[in-house]
Length: 133
Image 1 (cartoon, one colour):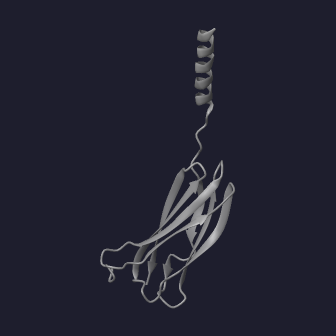
Image 2 (tube, helix red, strand yellow):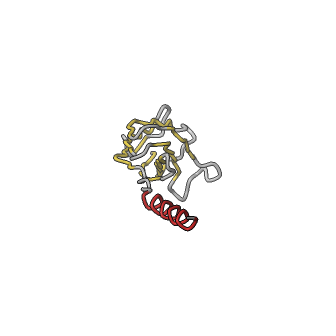
Image 3 (tube, one colour):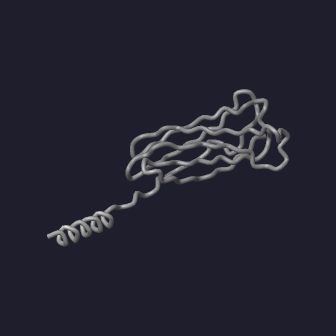
């Protein structure tokens, strides 16, 4: 009888382990910048339009902006933007508006990184480049 219970337990564990489906990573359906170049002036903004989805549920996305040029004038204090946004549901679309830190923003090439995470801790990332002049 003990041997029978051990076999049943082992088979149950194997079947349940094989039956678990891994969650797919989130999907970035679209990611675009309203403008791929922005003039450095008072009130200037960068607009990011996105559409994301996931099979089990979204958790958050992170927006990161870094300078992408070697000769930045403010090398000791470059513009660095990073912010997490909470999202819920299985799909989400919106626009994020980021104000440029005028007059401290350096003209040049910048890289925007968009990373979305789901409730299962899977991540998907995309990058876009833009210019501040």
